[in-house]
Image 1 (cartoon, protein in one colour):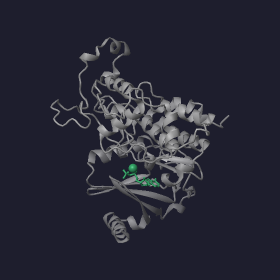
Image 2 (spheres, rainbow, N blue to C red):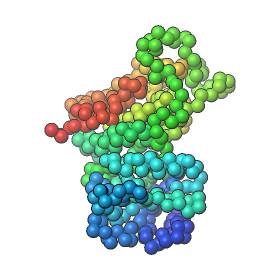
Image 3 (cartoon, rainbow, N blue to C red):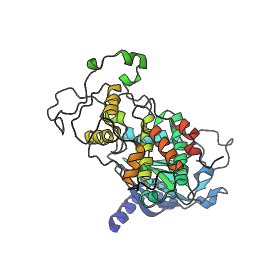
Image 4 (cartoon, rainbow, N blue to C red):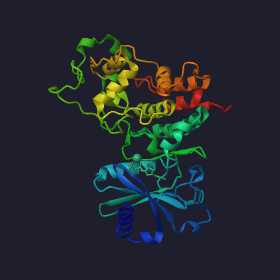
Length: 391
Ligand code: ADP
Ligand code: MG
């Protein structure tokens, strides 16, 4: 493994002429589906008066002025000492790479979003340079978090989501590895806009956007039945209906119900659901909380919690009929309080504290099955839970 990392670093330095004079590669810090990320030192960072060598506070860091933009009106540029070099795999399409860089550029001034410093291309190779942000491993700290810790963590995440959503951008891949959080400083930044898109991109009208009035008068029987599970437990094997296309990008276990129901008019509410799954993970002390292999299994997991009645209603919003005879899926489902008590194996004599109940109330607002009823990032920041201890 070590030698392959060495070889990777060698290749990066050789592919980009002048790389060695600018950056000193330190180590590989991430390997994902779409990229390899290295930590490096910017060799010339201290040539600038405003050099910045903190690894944890990006709030005072400003990206360099834009080419062509007026640099005189801006504050003198600060330079990050340590950088994260994201080498995007050549298998990613050029349109996709451009999309990620463009969105990052649009979001460069947003609080709690990791800014893009610059990017290079050499033939089919693209690297993005970001300030390095020190962070902990979610699996190592999430079980230890107190309720106030959780509120601070989520405040930071929802601050990022608010500005991303104000730019009408869907992140599409909210999960712990894309939110870099340092539990010691209690700061976090959102990264990885590889799946992000502007709201309205390839959207076609979906029933869920019709006025509620119209919906009320619609007869359930006339709804175009699209996703229907077999009346036998298991999977529909010979489904001959035409397939429906919708963006399903994201990570399994974090996909919102409307993504699973192939809603063709997805909104920023999908990110709020995923943030809710992070909160459910922390409160239940189980990671991953949802562990489905595919979308049908993911629907079963969600239906087990919410019950078939509410799941059916959620499907109908998008014109889908949800049918199941799986015995573990009840009509009514369970309350989040029950789910959390069970998954943490809490004894009856240790009831939930008022703070825990407040966190669960907030969780329920993030995990509303109906995206139009789900809390928005702005509303979340105004919620009592995220304002704990901030009086
Ligand atoms: P991918 O698309 O491959 O998932 P990410 O942008 O999510 O790429 O980066 C992968 C990993 O690299 C992250 O989970 C994180 O551990 C690390 N990483 C990315 N950006 C930074 C950064 N600015 N500072 C520190 N680590 C980073
Ligand atoms: Mg990632």
